[in-house]
Amino acid sequence: MSSVLYDTPGPRAKRRNLLYSALFLVLLAAGVWWALSMMAEKNQLTAEKWSPFVTDSAIWTTFLFPGLGETLKAAGLALVIALPLGALLGIGRLSDHAWVRVPIGAVVEFFRAIPVLVMMVFASAMFVQFTTIESEVRPLYAVVTGLVLYNASVIAEIVRAGILSLPAGQTDAAKAIGMRKGQTMRYVLLPQAVTAMLPALVSQLVVIVKDTALGGAVLGFSELLFQIRSITANYGANTIAAFTVVALMYIAVNGLLTRFAGWLERRLRQGGKSSGATVDITDIDTELGGGVAEEVAVRKGHGTGT
Amino acid sequence: MFDFLDNPQYDLLGAFWVTVQLALYSALGSLILGTLLVGMRVSPVPLMRGFATTYVNAVRNTPLTIVLIGCSLVLYQTLGITLAGGDSKTIGFRMAVLGLAAYTGTFVCEALRSGINTVPVGQAEAARALGLSFFQVLTLIVLPQAFRSVIAPLANVLIALTKNTTVAAAIGVAEASLLMKEMVENESDSLLAVFGVIAFGFVLLTLPTGLLLGWVAKRMAVKR
Image 1 (spheres, chains in turn cyan, red):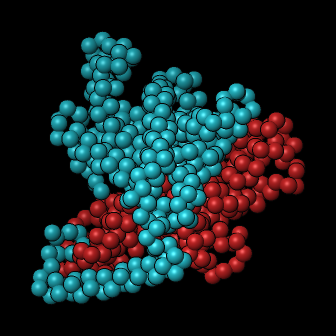
Image 2 (cartoon, one colour; image 1 turned 60 degrees about the horizontal axis):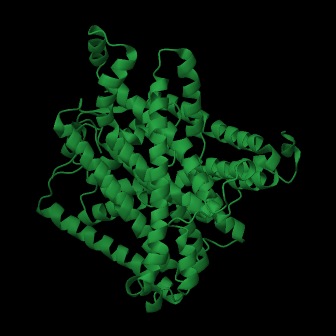
Image 3 (cartoon, chains in turn purple, brown; image 1 turned 180 degrees about the vertical axis):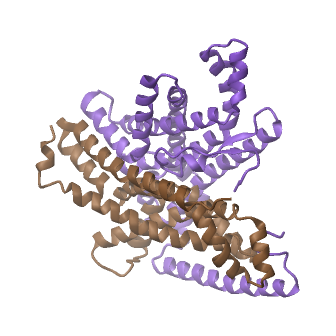
C-alpha cells in the first residue's frame, strides 16, 4: 500500500505507526470521555432519555418516520420538477442563437448565486401574498419552489457539462448523415450525456435532501429535523438523544445515495456504453451552492479521481 | 417601491457585514480544519485515517442546518458551552462560525485530497530518497503544490460557504437572510424589491469572489 506520501512500512515504521495510533487513541478517548462526562453532568445520558427510541415504537411512527416521509416527499418532488426544467435550461444554454443562450445563461447564473434559503423565504412570502394555498401545505410548496429554482439551474449545468463531455465527432457524424440540430440532440447527444451525468444527478439528490432541512428550521415545514422539537417536548427534554438519532437517519439516507452514485459511476464506466466521461459534481456544486461561471470540469475516464 | 431602504429599522449594510464576517471567520476555520483532516486522511497511521474518513463522510451527509442548530441547541443551550462567554448574540455568532467551519472543513479536506492526487508520485519518491519524513514530504513538497492546484475548487467552497452563512439565521444570527425574513414580513407590498435587494447583495458577494479566485487559480496553477 505504497502511496504518494509514504512507502509500505518496514518494521521500524510499523512500530512508530503503532505508537502514533496509541497516542491518537488516548487523545480520542479523552475527547469522548470529556463529552460524555459533560452530557452526564447535564443529565443527558440517563436511560429514560434514550430508551424511547428502542422501546417506544410510537416515537418512530408518530414523529421520525412521518418526518422522514415529508423530507423525502419534498426532495422527490423537487427533483422530479427540476429535472426536466434543468434539462431544458441546460440545452438552451448550448443554443446556437444568442437570444436564447444569453438570457438562459443569465437566469441560471442568477439562481446559482443566491442562497436556497433566501429563495424559500421569498417563495413563502409570495405564496402568502398572491395565492390561496392553505397554510398547512404552504411550507411544502415554498420549500419545493426554492429547491426547484436552485437545483434546476445546477442540473442545467450538469446537463450542459454532460453534453459537452461528448466527443465532437458525435455531432459531426450526426450532421454527416443529415440530422437536424434537434434530432442530433434527441437521438445522439442526450442519450449518451444522460449516462455521463447520472452519478452527478444522484449526488445532487443528496444536496436536495439536505436542503429540505432548511424548510423545517425557517418555515416550519414538518420534515425530519422539525420533529426534534416535538420529540424533546414529549419525551422529557432529550435534546441530545433526538439530535443524534435524527442526524444518524440523515447520514444513513444520504450515505446510501452517495454509495449508489459511486456504484452507478463505476458500473457506467465498465459498461463501455458511455464515452467513459463523467461529470464531476464537485466542480459544479460543492454543497448548497456552487460557484459562478466556472467552466465545469469534466473528468475523462480514470482521471484524477478522488 | 424601494422606500423601505430608507427605514432606519433595517440595517442592510450591517446585516451583510455580518454575512461577510461569518464567511471570513468560517473560511479561516475550515481551512485549518480541512488541512488537519487531510493530513490525517493521507497519513500512514490507520486509526487517524479511519477517524478522518468517518468524520468527513458523516458530516458531509448531515444537513448544515442540523450542524448549526446542533451547535446552538446542544453545545450552548444544553451543555452550556459558551466559547469564552459574552452575551447570547456573540455566542450565537461564534456557534455559527464553529458549525460552519466544522461543516465546510470536510469539503476543504476533500478538495485538498484531490489536489494531493495531482502531485506526481515521483516527487514524493525523490523527497523520500532525500530522507524526508512523512510530515516533511507532506508540508514541504506535496501540500504547497496541492494548494496551488485546488484554488478553483476552494473558490467554489468559499462561494458555497458565503451562501451557507444564511443558515445561521436558523439560530438567530442577525445576517442578511434574517433581515430579509423580517423585511418580507413587514413590507409585504414590495416583496419583489426586497428579494431583489437581498439577491443583488449575494450576487455582489459571490460573483467577484468567483472571478477573482478563478483568475488567481489560473495564475497559480502548477504547469505540468
